[in-house]
Image (spheres, rainbow, N blue to C red):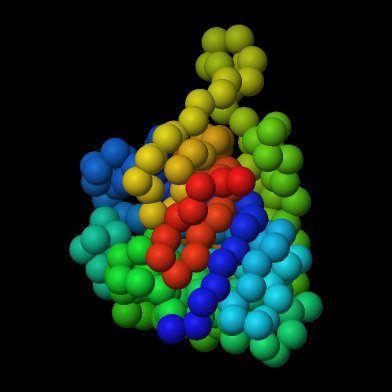
Length: 212
């Protein structure tokens, strides 16, 4: 197994109601699970390959809950990544060289027998972690915008977090709203002002590490 470790920030939008039932061991709000995710790796490595500054996006779609399987997934690695970085990133985000059940990538990959060809395209990601705002754009595949939760009466920004001490994706995530429009092989239909989260990603082959 090749040792790897990454630290960065993730933006995710799924089709469920705010809070995402999966985080609380419940079934998806609308029966299906559909998501778009973008990741900026500030620093990291895969063996001797430096992954600092790389970007990855993924799309997932399951006909039911994730654990029921039969999902479809696609990975998009930013075209600026070198050949070595592309290979390393694809292995990490498809659960290879990872201990069994240790990361969400391992689980999502195991539950997605339908893996579409990895794409190498521009992955444009902007984020303000503290403000809970951001956007991601992969030409011809998807575009997502994130914004803070808001009070339905006053319109004021509302802040909420999910804390998962034993989480396989993160330990703490900021909750927001997201809207995704798709143009590629995977079509997401219910991601309109639906659940989104911002989280700091720090993990290795064995799972989530404490954020420094």
